[in-house]
Image 1 (tube, rainbow over the protein chains, first blue to last red):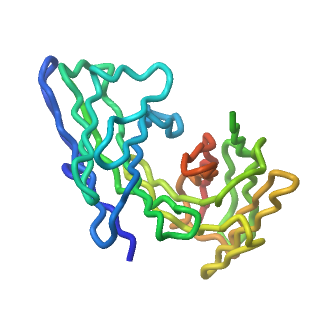
Image 2 (image 1 turned 60 degrees about the vertical axis):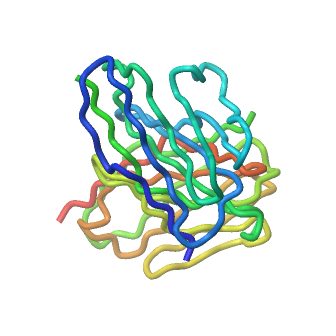
Length: 117
Length: 110
């Protein structure tokens, strides 16, 4: 159990376009989902926390107008990178937690690799 | 603010050796600690999850320990194999937010 999927697994886009990444909890309801970003040869950094039905909470330095997060249901959160630029090229990973899990354990998705040309 | 440090940053060993990877954290009020494996260009694979009330977890050749009071965790890999070559990340969960270390890149030479 506790599987989290992401779609797409990787995407290449032109500069200036918007890209949407989906994060789904497949077999549990996730009241909270997290989005992380990993630049090459660096570790993962938390970007934002989203709770179902409310606005996401962004970490310091993350532009909320650039990285739009929607958590419209208990099994789906989306991250939209608006007007993507080459510096947005990164590995984006989501995680999901459930209040039913022990101490709200986070389960991580496989990640989405974004390359902006 | 939680800070997570992993030592060493890189490690190269011959096949068959037992090895230990270290993870330390500054805020001991954690929910749990996870060890992940990440292959180049790939996503995270969860290896072991230790809840704050536990002291260790084992899976096959892997054993992870947790000492919350000293802010340390170790990942022990027995009888290492070339297929174990990857970057190993530890992540500490405080109130539902995870903080990752920078990882240890392991190379196991045949």
